[in-house]
Amino acid sequence: MSLTFKKIQPGREIQSVELLRGIASAMVCFFHLSNGNPRFLPQDNAIRQSGSIGWAGVEIFFVISGFIIPYAMFTKHYKVPDILIFLKKRIIRIEPPYLISIALVIGLNFLSTLSPFYRGAPFSINWPNVAGHIAYLNAFTGAHWLSDVYWSLAIEFQYYLLIAVSFGMLTSRKMVFRLLFFAVFAAASFLKLPANAFIFSFSGYFLAGILLFEFVCGIISAREFGILMIGTLALLYYKYGPVMTSLVVATLLVITYVNKVPSFLRWLGTISYSLYLTHIPIGGRVINIAEVKIHSVLLRECVVFLAFFISIATAALFYKYIEKTFKRLSSNIRYDNSVAPKLKTVLE
Image 1 (tube, rainbow, N blue to C red):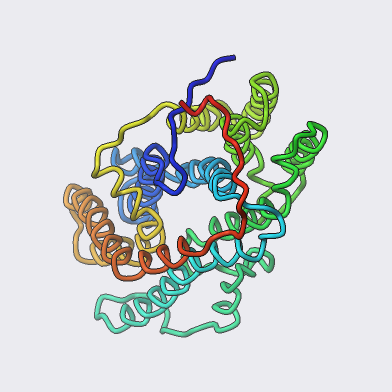
Image 2 (tube, one colour; image 1 turned 90 degrees about the vertical axis):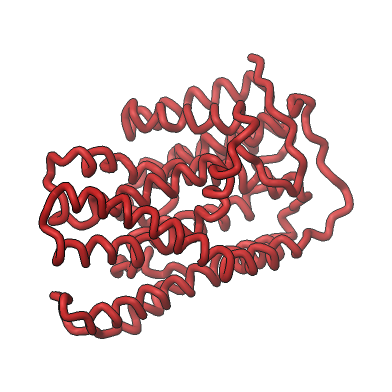
């Protein structure tokens, strides 16, 4: 089995990953804007239907994380004793923007109640529920998330914990440890768990990315990669069907073979986390206001695109003034290792 992988310099952005992040966040954003308010567009409306598959952007993120998180750990010389440093890096990178977005949601919810067009319940804060967003405890209690995207951040954080403690198994020279991780993680996907609460419900997506990481870094052979990837795709096909399996394959191919990405799409990938956090409180609010003021279906279709571009503009500001600072702080934290792993020569 022959697979040529572009050369990647550690510490630099991988353009294909940035492309996919931008596409995935845009898909999720357009899905929520076109389908989030069930009263805004008719069921058979073309705009609504075109955005109906956008939720799958979340699964693209899971495949990306499956690959890029262990890849970054490997190229930056992570070892399991560095787990506290790893968690410090991830918490500084992810949590402050997340917590600020929660404050944004609460603040905008309050301001909305002051509008003469507001038709919901009076403003109130359920403080235990808000507290449950810290450390993503709502995933375990089943409590309501303040934004519909937060559940996936809980899944991602569970993956960070899993990969941090099992990294030695993934990178072990002994096949038995690698296969043990694969078998247990894959088997756990059949557990009966609450919807969208635990990582094991999405094992197949993460495994696809993990296997690509192991192969391009020379940890597993082409034979092992091929056999385990076939098993992973079979698992995905069994649980999610041909469409989602094809989407995973396409994601892996883009990561592997796309070398050059237009600057705008790279930029969209750069702000993807900010877009993911802010599009519902900002763009969704535009949709809800338009529902009261605009009754023409054609104009409502235009509002969906207007809300989409407003969401992107807001995300750009959120990234510049909030996310970028914590991204830089996280990148300045390094693992205390002097021995670099050797990458396989397929990184050509």
